[in-house]
Image 1 (cartoon, rainbow, N blue to C red):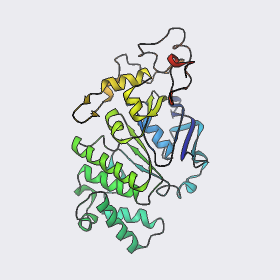
Image 2: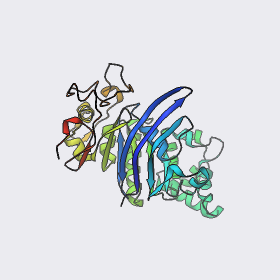
Image 3: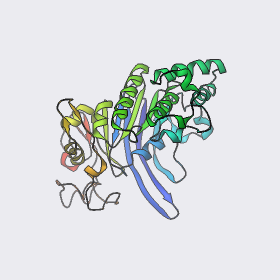
Image 4: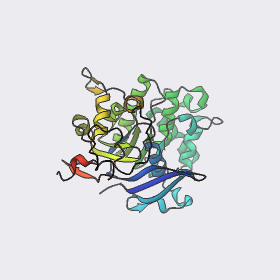
Length: 325
């Protein structure tokens, strides 16, 4: 049984008279305890997807159609007051910039305690649990760290605090929106290892948003590849990396550098995968990748959007696989 099912999710940014499509019929499911990476370059719709899943999208980001089913309940139909009981307990979010998640006016320990007290913990219970959480996320001397303000912490320490707040109530689903992109390489590796450890210990499902296929390879069981608001490939991480099917996924993988000593993929930046034709986010009638694809078929790819084809247990949206099983 799926913990989360997203069906035909379509959304646009609407500013004045202008409308820009950012998600186009996005469909996937996530099982309990499964870790899925959402991979794509800047502007692919990854962060917009994360905001909608967490119901944190502002009024400019409009869901036009589709469903987001959490244990069968459509979150898109819930009022803000109804969402309160889900946030933290069922679904929690880690943002790219931890500074935006922390209040500069309060000690970090109080901010963790506040999240706990909002869900029934007494003051003493919240204090003790906050200390345990600070220790669990790797902050030394939790009692001293409890009283520190955000400005007294490094970027990596702030992200650890944000993670502590997110996991405080042991959510069933954790949505991490590029939580390591603002950190240096060594700190990034530490945060990834920490997240892997925590979600495995708690049996938490995770959606990890990233532009870096190397990070996705390290942290996920399954990869969902996005391009220009469309899902182009979904499959088990090792299978997708070993044998990518969609031309865009092939481009992502070929742009990565494999470190044979560590048997892992190194960072892939958006600049590695973006062509110079200036057509990113261009609305097209056919395949969203048609302007970059070296395998495009004129009269087909430029006039008809491909369906989702099941190939060896993997989903790929490409005309090259039409009719194959």
